[in-house]
Image 1 (cartoon, one colour):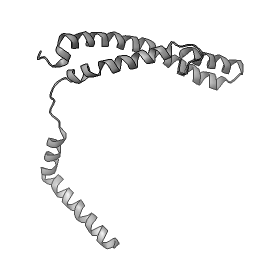
Image 2 (spheres, helix red, strand yellow):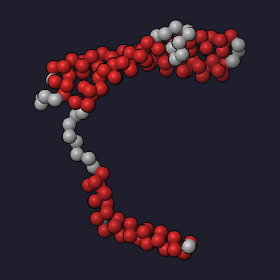
Image 3 (spheres, one colour):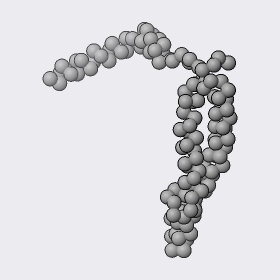
Image 4 (cartoon, helix red, strand yellow):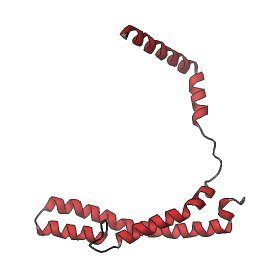
Length: 133
């Protein structure tokens, strides 16, 4: 059984090597792997705008929540303060880095929200991406 398997493996390897050496296999693989662009995806993006907007709004709401909201900046700040009070320096440092990153998310999401408002108005003006430019 093992001799059969190794013979099949050897033959498959030789066939692959022959195709690669001749260039036919590589050219055929390159042709089939390269998709042709059909547009900029405006129609698909216009379709997704409401869901993207809701997701960004939900994330901003969570980040701006109070200390009782999971994932909020205030809750993570409270955890940093508690770790410092308890004398857990390494934990406080780790949580502080997470807090810094979480704080940096707020302006990024706000910018995305502004950009998405522009996309929304473009979609309204161009029949949700169906009209030709």
